[in-house]
Length: 444
Image 1 (cartoon, rainbow, N blue to C red):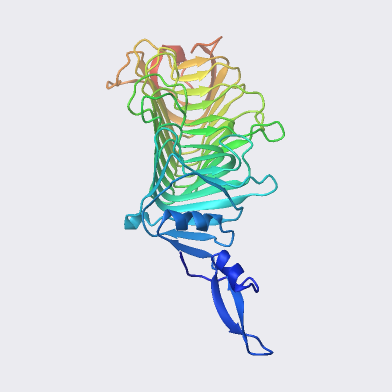
Image 2 (spheres, rainbow, N blue to C red):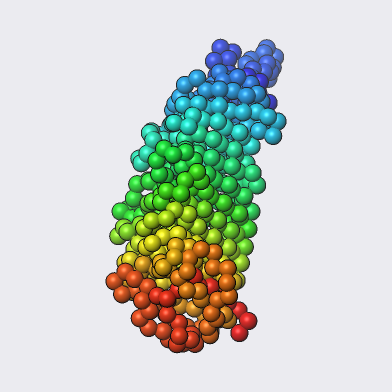
């Protein structure tokens, strides 16, 4: 294992230095001029074999590992010491890391946290149970001590990482995660500004999975999980691409209470069933979960599967969807139930001069909402287009209604019935009659 950069750490004997895998330098003493052994443990390890890779992971002095030739795991690599560590995979040079059925396990640490950075890697794991990194003591909650920074990662296997108590951050323009189960388990998730991410979850007919499972512990009794998409990022996720079965699990699932889509960013989810969901739990840290689209952003949610599942499920009282100026939210479904489910009272959709707010149910004679006391608050909507419940692609001329600034309250015990309208909206607007609507903002 060849090392490059040195970090002086005091004096050791030759035997001790060799045992640590350190570079040994002979230097004169200032008194006698006789050589002594100086410890110069290098931070960077250049590895070409799995044995060298394992040794570098277990050496706490190593903080950068460059993998220069393809390697294959032989076993789990457990209890790697807690420190910030970078693995450079040289994927652009054809290097492949095959983790097979095994994983790197970061040592459990309940008193602090370190980050493992995984960059420029092409990783292949077993479809049945392969994953590259496991943060902490095990494979689920109460596994503490680690975050993961992933940049330009290609992964195929069961899951990329198990990080139930950590934060997974993606960066770079070349991230391709293709998994049999979820892409990852996380406590928090962030895509840095400008990130490009292409994810496929539940890629075989072996069960239903979300794309990201927020399955960590509650923090002071509260669900605090967040999914943050930075400005100008482009996030594309497919769930169950091989199937039109009506899958239950969405892109972000369980203890996630806030999803932010940054300015000019995009989130495109193509799901076998449910694409987006806040589940019905009473422990959200901010009391109500929120889905926030910043100016210029674009969110497309598509549910392919027929049946009873809505594409977007806002399943807690007062759930909020906030669409900023020039942002776009397009939700398409194929459901006998609805495209948007807001069964619990008080869900609110706030539209501030949106570029487009569009809902489409491709199932004939089917509603847009399965709602109870839900409200759309809109400002500066210049055009409202409506289509009857004909289903299909709605490739015919709509009926246009007056817009402006208005509120529509609808849903009497789980339906689309319009209960009241206020403001500039046309008195002919009746949400229960439509299979598709489009609200376009600006220009007033």
